Length: 397
Image (cartoon, rainbow, N blue to C red; front, side, top):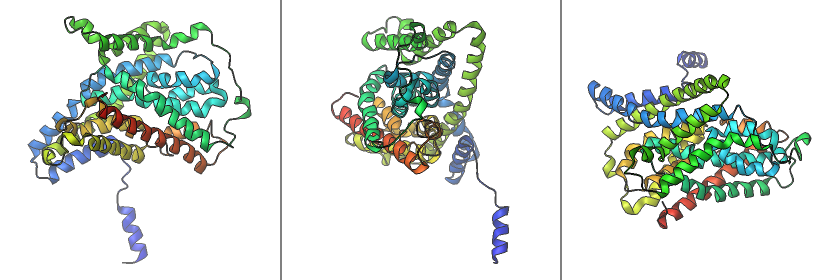
């Protein structure tokens, strides 16, 4: 065949540039048909798998995105270097590290790069972001998620900070007009933006410390999903009337797209379970560490391939749920293994890379920026995984 005819043949082939939900749907159906399931089995299994996680995710994502939308309408406090302390909680509360970075960057000054990794860690490790989203797909409704995230956050953030300090020792990282920007305390009223997080934390701590099973209403509202609903209602009524509709519409738009990813990934997991002898492939109870590392690697591969941490949360958890249901493994540990895998890595296919690259790292080349951000995120991931294994050995998760 001539070169010309080969080129013509290639042009006739369809270009596979499909969104993740479409690829997952095709994978689910193709896997079922290729392994011998009949048409009714494929349809029934797909339908069951698709709907399995949607209810939990709707209860998590809709109120979370409502809080995020309402918070974005408020001015956040200018507190200089202390911005690194509030950025993890801002990223978790906004359910988006990109939005948190954009909101806090103007007040972060020379601390922008450090703040970016603190926000990244908060989004991955703190309720109501990563752990609650992944937990919803895995059916984990444990107030202990809050505590484990708070235990992991300081050393994980510190690992990224140490990497950045060593890697950027002789670098100029921020524009001259950002150096030393705004180190004065914020007006007291600006802290009101964080009030939904105080409500959420108070209810979760109450649910974690008290046995409220005899009072079903109180028991529900001190569990993660119920507490998040209360915080969202608080946020709604604390928002000016003219902005309430805007926040609701924003939360619905953001939720609907992710629910499709969640359903499709869950369908893949359901069909894979139906055609693969999972019981013979999994480690026994003595292999919990290996199981955690396996979940970490799956999440890391998904994040590396398609870039979005949120899509990784939405896709990986329902995809591996059938596996986890057969494992004798701590559900909380499984949640954090996936969250930590999603740290790997901040690369050019991640929108966060370009947000930080164009601001805190605008004077660096692409290779240098990738070295800084990917290196920091990988250090954070491995530090968190080592701590999670230690927590598992000590019986803390």
